[in-house]
Length: 122
Image (tube, rainbow, N blue to C red):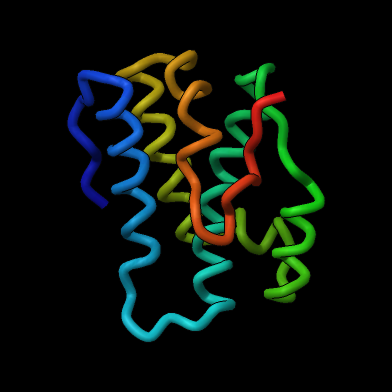
């Protein structure tokens, strides 16, 4: 995955996170379970970052558990996957470029689709 160049604004940062997420949804003929797995894997990487670094954010565990049940996988399964790893790398790189506060500000709106609402403002 190509790392994103330094965004110069909030909208640029949000765009960078969104573009990183599009890579997980760009496959043709993806099943619903595969889409949930990719989107939730990515959101879990962001949620793990938020849990450690963003005291103003919370994780909707009920939503996470509901999605895990639908795909019959565990959080550990998704954390071992490529979608999680790619998102973790993107978040780490953007934190270096933009700072932790900026990442914490955009994470609640960075994930859509099935993972919308996994990360929420407290």
